Image (cartoon, rainbow over all chains, first blue to last red; front, side, top):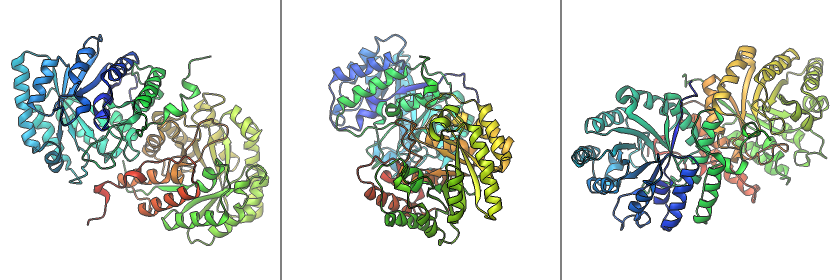
Length: 308
Length: 308
């Protein structure tokens, strides 16, 4: 297993994390989060979502976040878009990546987006046309969620995930990720589905998104890495969840994911102490919320500390 | 990867767990823990430690626990022994397995047992002689701790771990496990060291013991399983720790470890609901202590529930 290829961790706390928390934190704090994450070495950050403010008032300042993020050299700024209208806003904002979620589960797709998966695929084709006609270089990334199972439907057939992976690439997605937002994935399944996915999509399959709902988050990250995944979503303090996944709280934490790769000697470009300091600030801003993650408490092992 | 071979999970809460908790819980509650664990399908349980009661008063009733455990059909009863005197007590108790810890770290060995690793190897030879002359069938298992690094010494050379593995088998250990009681291990290292260990010890290398101190517990269990390990220590509610490892709290939890294997379709013989119910009782008995684990909160995924 080659440990010299860098792994990219994309911080998704400002979107996936805050989306699951009812309170609205002020834009100034989000900007501090953004800048501290950048200072810690994170070079991909999902800063918000272009959804109607009445649905997610806590993300209503997404355009301001993108504007500020655009001033940070070398930062790849992602935003979530639910549909063509959101994509229009993303293109206007100047974001580098627009991330469109597509539930592989038919039932979850209807509950979450009120569209069938194939209706979302058709929307992806329209978004691609819009992007191309706009002349924007914004990448269109599709997050195939419930790829490992669904709280509503239960099992999701691997053949359906692979069919949709094919379909979204045909519809014009630049890249695709597989996501387990409900904490159903297990490591053998993760390896198998990513291996099959790479056979379909090659390096256009370019992200793993795992939640630690049932304790397997980092085991799944490791398994995906073994299968060849080199880009992962993670969230400071392990916040985040899914409104349609009861009890499903917690993306894998950025700190613990960074620690996993650092412990294996895999380059991430991240400053551990800066990530832990950011976690402490986020913990203040979100006082009273349940946070997650382990390494912030124990600190780095002696074997990873700089020589005294 | 063959998922049909069963995995054995040994419950170590009554020893490794309670050892790290200052309060003494009554023998009656320990017996309930023992019987509930057995009812949940656990067939290997570490019930205590034959150390002087002045050092660990909370484990002073170990002989009573062994006596009760011996009446449970098919249960393999383990006890920890620190030295020859403890081994004598273990043999008298009728335990099935006596588990002797040996720190691969020279510094940790001196701090924890006031002996060098090679002095412990010599003690293992004396314990083996005692066992043989007693006519007992009690297995002598050595737990090679700090095998992945040490809070005092830092790095521990793999060559030293393998040298000691050789030495303890030569001294008469029936089987050996590799342990990370301080949460320093990472999955690639776990795979590599177990693979090298199997080359030395074959199936006499027969246990993986991991702590979740820095969030990598289950990733390490999965990596060890990939390397061929089929027997793991775990602790209800993820309690446990090491007095010489500051901040190092938490064996991998029995419930989450059982869930990991169940989710992959690997047989463990364990009843998930019974494990969760046991966790709830342990949480009552240990009210105020910090507990760990994730799946007890979220429950099984829909894909693993019996059909309605």
